[in-house]
Image (tube, rainbow, N blue to C red; front, side, top):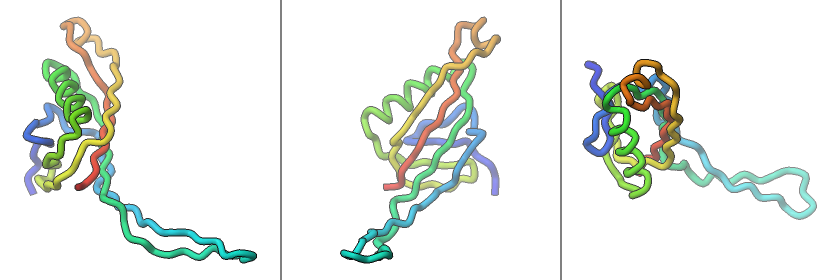
Length: 124
């Protein structure tokens, strides 16, 4: 399968993430404790929506554009299509974006920011 650039809500990343959790679903259950019981009763309820956490670095002229796009998507709670490097797509929402400014000598000399980021998406 050919590798493609990541995109979310029609915005394409300038650099692919270096870390990706893949789509992870979590099983949910209700735990009950009977009166005077010494064991818990677990009732399977279902699964939570799939989550995907990615992280990476953005440097160069597109760094500020990336930062602005993700901050806007987070604040406006936009639902969009996330396409990963394999071309697989899912409808999801950005629920967490944590950018951290890092020092990059070349970017600093050119007056451009460099970011290390972590973003989390939830399938809707």
